[in-house]
Length: 132
Image (cartoon, rainbow, N blue to C red; front, side, top):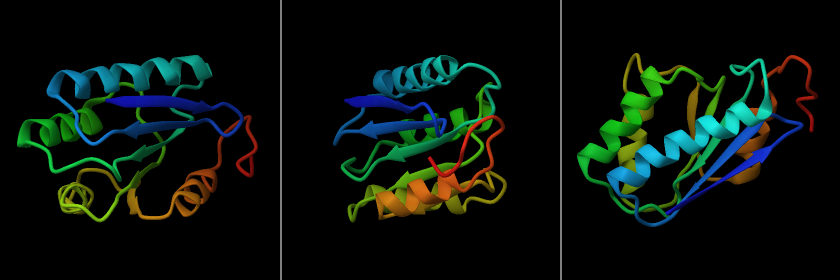
């Protein structure tokens, strides 16, 4: 289960992921993220993403691998990716992803939503006000 929101003025895609996520839902989430980026209009690389996995339980390796593959191969990458984690075991899974060398330098873990949004808004976006 997931929900996708768009903060239009700040060009931030918000992905809220529930406690469980099937492999099919994981790929559906990635399509929904791309659809949200397209709704922003060009330039498509001029956006950031907040992925809230704070309620997500530990995931099978194929779900984690799907996230890693998508992060590396997406045709509309986010400038920055903030990952909101809770206190569960999925936090360890996502920490390993973020710390994996060579994955992405523009990805960070957060436990505070406002801090994560502030970090994302700190990115300079062409044609938009990052303070929004």
